[in-house]
Image 1 (cartoon, rainbow, N blue to C red):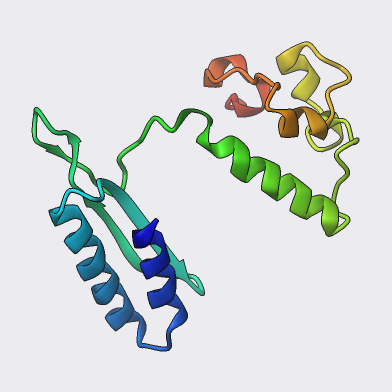
Image 2 (image 1 turned 120 degrees about the vertical axis):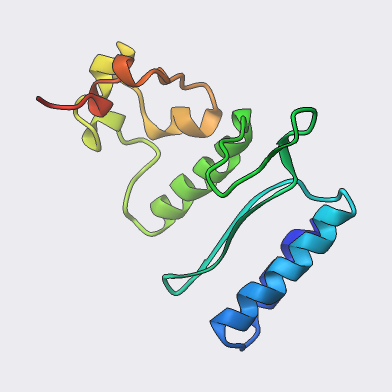
Length: 143
């Protein structure tokens, strides 16, 4: 949490983008060197990438380093962010939690076998969407 706060503080200060990126890298490196951070960081401000780097190891035993492209198993961590986004979109009048999901993606019911799934199911964390690209119609490549 300290690292996130420090990064946000650095991004909010007025400094040339190059300096910001270098300062953030120094900060994250200090946390990584003290074994207080292990992962990847991407900071973008006004469309410009300020920092894109991996820190620590993806596999400590094999000494495989993290890279900006390292994929992490984050399990259910994204549910909170998704719920916040849905509520924000509802607040802006762009959707309603009572809307059916197929309003936004007509192929959705075919993938889940449900014709009455609403956005509120996402908020409840009870919606299961297949993760295999081949099992989800909207991710299949059209030939």
